[in-house]
Length: 333
Ligand code: KG4
Ligand code: ZN
Image 1 (cartoon, rainbow, N blue to C red):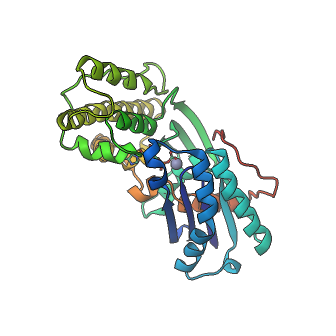
Image 2: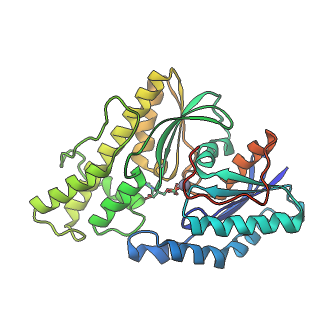
């Protein structure tokens, strides 16, 4: 079956075509250049760019897959969580395509899609498994029993890990998104140089990263360093110190959750799962006998192939959406 996936939940305009689980095309058009000077995403700009680009991006996805709209069997679209104006663009566009082509439409949760990115590549986990979704908007741990059966074990109480990366990057004078930049800088820094608090929230699988921001603010003040313009060496060491704390918390929580839930498989996904230190440390879990599944970096960050594969599995389970499908900024799994 041929599935057209559409994702406009945040600042990437994306369309993909799958043949069952096989990716025929996966186009991601990034708006970063229009947002980076503001140090974050400007929702109004994001919606306008989605409107400008969605038709071209979808045509490109169909062309690259060597098919046309009439060949599609299912339209899968992300309807939340995300920026409401952005979501509405993809949703209205998908409804129009479904109406015009008389093909079914199915709404997909963005977090479910991040988890299901693992089914786009050769090695699939068996159920049940643990999943950490770690992105710009979310840091959540789930027990995944089966397709469509998720139990949230914990989530971020304040900043998501990606959000923390982006905010610290801004304090270091780096552009948006800060995650990949801190990742690169940290490789040249000393992770032991600055002792930052490790926010572990004992007795819970929740996360809290906003205190790190405050600790770094205080550190800058004590060292008399101007926010947004620190010296190069400081940037490298702080990036390494900050990253080592975040990654340690994520890995330790995974280890605890695996133990408590008596699971031996974990899927780590979402934009921050593209982080090289997190990927390296995740491999330590393999040495302890756990199975670790990390989608390739391009499938960890936002893309429409993950929407299409989650839509495919929902369709196979007999689920359908209709034209009353609405966009939701908040949509828990
Ligand atoms: O999943 P995603 O593409 O979008 C959301 O659903 O939020 O995640 C984007 C987030 C951003 O905060 C970005 O800074 C972070 O993922 N990110 C990274 C890396 N690549 C992207 N964070 C740390 N290291 C990376 N290499
Ligand atoms: Zn995402």
